[in-house]
Image 1: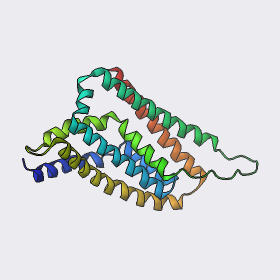
Image 2: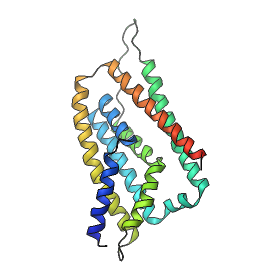
Image 3: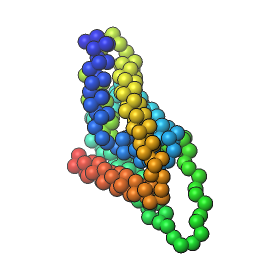
Image 4: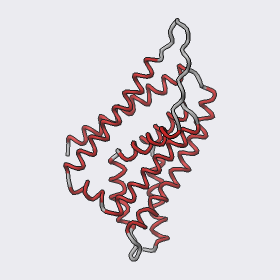
Length: 213
């Protein structure tokens, strides 16, 4: 297998994975609909940075530790599940606390920064063990003789990042245009409730899968 063939083959697999709705899509969509376009792009950038980190880890064999050690994988999975449940619960609580009242309107809080959006995307991706499993299962299959593993891992992860950036970038542009027409407190609350509920359910499912190991 040549490098060109490996990149094309991996790109096909990564494209199929990217187009399947998942946690990354939900997170970016929620940020775009309830926040600023800049923060949504920063969240997407954080997710792609996490993919690069996973790609490097897979190339260096770090993800093999998760595969070989049930305890290490279980700890990683439970950390990710706890983070998802915590983030979802925060969205749910915030959506109920912002219910309209009859008193004077409070000044709107300052929107979260782009740096915070980047950190949220990065941490969410790094604590998602399914991303690590994907890289562990695919990158060795597309190794090329004579190419250093780290170089190949970063190259393939960059391909995944490029595909993900196009997909998430289009999602941000489309949803932010829709969000501009639905910029109401009630709409933002319902977006937080739906997204928060999805994150809590996803985190609970991840935790149950860890118990089964």
